[in-house]
Length: 528
Image 1: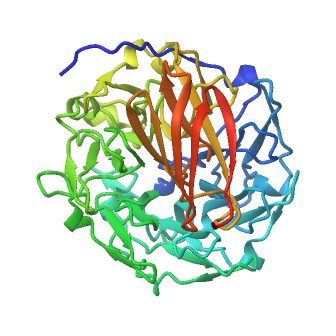
Image 2: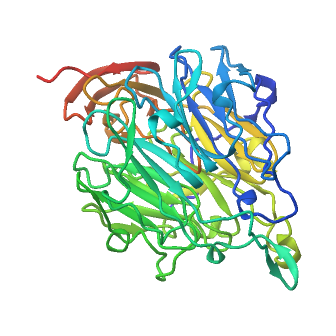
Image 3: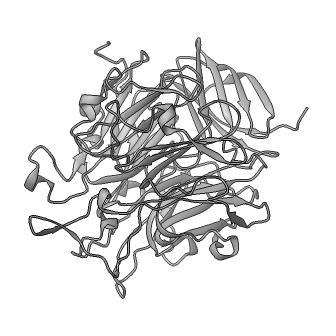
């Protein structure tokens, strides 16, 4: 196994300097409500279609009635590497107890919309071109529960985006009794909470949705769902769903176009190699080994290690955590957000993991643990393994925090992917990527027959003798959403030899000799 990597990462934390001043409030009241420990997420997306990535950040507390509400915030990118905060009283500010966010153009009007999950009623905000309208009631998407991650995808391939909403557990604050440890009140663990079913809303195509959770076989309450990632894991042209469950077997739902079949056990992604469930938190999918299909990475509790599941085809996966060099390195950390992304543009997906414990008193009973933890950054060797570059990844990555949601985007349009992380009860951290990087290509897809966001489109890029595979995906990481633009590293190449796109509609599009170092808008062609 290689012991070095040619690229050197260099990330600097610059949130406040570029206008991203955001304080997260978790509503901690001293009553040990479990939801206080789970934090919130964030989303990069181009809300105004001006070609750059804006940033939406979710806030939480307080939970107690009568206290001032904490609001979400939209930060608009001015195109020069700086952000301007939106008004706290604007519609999209949403003062519910927020957790997650997903983005997608559900009404196919060319503008991406926002879905926010809350403890309580969720909210759908329709993008009106400069302002947002709360259409939760009109769209019938206001699921009430303990919402966590959400994601848009066209599961029935009818040209519009459907919506999957994960729920964690049943939690009644009125009759809530905290757990205790040796007579001391503590936050309840997952096994002390009853799981809750997800909600699946099928898009009717007229601006409204219908709840078809049961019809599509997605109503199991066996999981405590946290991370969600859509992906065409069997390459049959329709999106499947992978769910990270806390202390419960993970789910892999195979799409059969009229319903989903849960095949987590069959696929070998439900448990660890010993056959035990783990505390799944965040999840991402990407082709880390360049074999043309989506692999899965999932973050877990401290002393469990994270998991890397290699896709072996036919919906069968292998746990390659140890051989990839991730087992021992991730074991001492409690992981939440995770991103597979090519941070140095060398054509291979690297890995960023945001860490932080759930118990502020963890050091009182576990001297090997800490509440605030530093992030991890792994460089892909290109040979099926990862090398820990956390200590040499720049000063930004050395900060300790109680990290939760993470997302990536090239917010400053300099050709490399930056990272934003939200810390529970703390603030937002924006890491500008100042690494020495190779050439790149960034693709913005616009569907015409497929959904306008292009979500679910599959891309294959040939360059420098290598083939990269990627999909346009809503959701991912933990409670968060990375930029919908698909980013490819090209190494030293001056062009992509060819780019093949499989649109959700079935349209196949080929581009050749695509010049490197550009943001490319690709419009879905008419059927031949």
